Amino acid sequence: MRLSTEEVKHIALLSRLELSDSERERAQNELSQILGYFEELSQLNTEGVEPTMHALPVQNVLRRDEVRAGLTRDQALQNAPESADGMFQVPRVVEAE
Image (cartoon, rainbow, N blue to C red):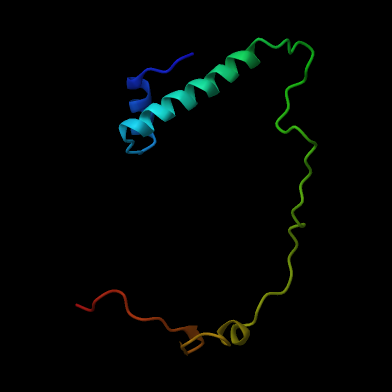
């Protein structure tokens, strides 16, 4: 399937890309090739093949969500550049009226 110049311009617009004429022509060729590969894949017989999300088995590698002790207030403020009354002190970003 060959993409038209207008289709590539539309894709570039949706992607918020500014393409020169040579970049647009290159994108047109490359995107057309990619769509051609998908056309080839659609001709494969996939009857009896289970749909998968990943090519390899995937397992959750995250740690268990367990409650544990956190930092004390003093530990949290230990490396703060400035603190006052047990709180982080930061520069004012809103002007006073």
